[in-house]
Image (tube, rainbow, N blue to C red):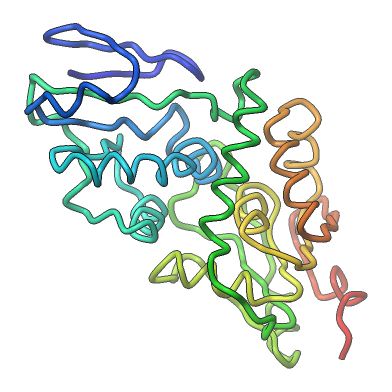
Length: 275
């Protein structure tokens, strides 16, 4: 079997032996290789993958535990995919990027979570709340006063990639007690990223997926967003972005910083700094 995406909520499937059914009850009677299709249309964009694909991992993990011949199928391996799957204890040998058995069984998750798709908002809200619980199982201490996460340069979605300059801001924060610079390009594990985010009182993030994902993980923090055009505009016409933002703002205080040239200096946040 092979497949390709047609739009936000449908696939074109090429099957040797077509057969379609709902649910997973019949899987116990099959010896064929089972592939669970996780990647969606914009899987190479971190924010899309996190809220459209990774959100399903806790449920998919149950299927993997029940069926030893099941694997997660990805369009391609990326660093953020590997780290997040590892966080959920999915080992590399349970992953696939190529269909090696022509006669196989494929599971497609219900694509209600496609961010740009305009339906299933109630289901998405419920899944979002369940997904958040996966990151807040351990108690945290706010040991970091100010955390800056510069915009990463690896694995960025080409169509949305942009340069955000925060060098002056980094130099400034390096002089502030209990401050920390965390660059996700060099983070060895997603669990490290979660820990540093949840242990920070003030978190400085760039607009777009870095804000959406890290602020979603954060809890009872002040979020300072470097940029005020991308997400604030998206939430006006993409309801699921609005749902994510509402969740973030329910658990954190959020403020956006404007810069017409995406250059952010110490003056951008000096009013927040209490030395």
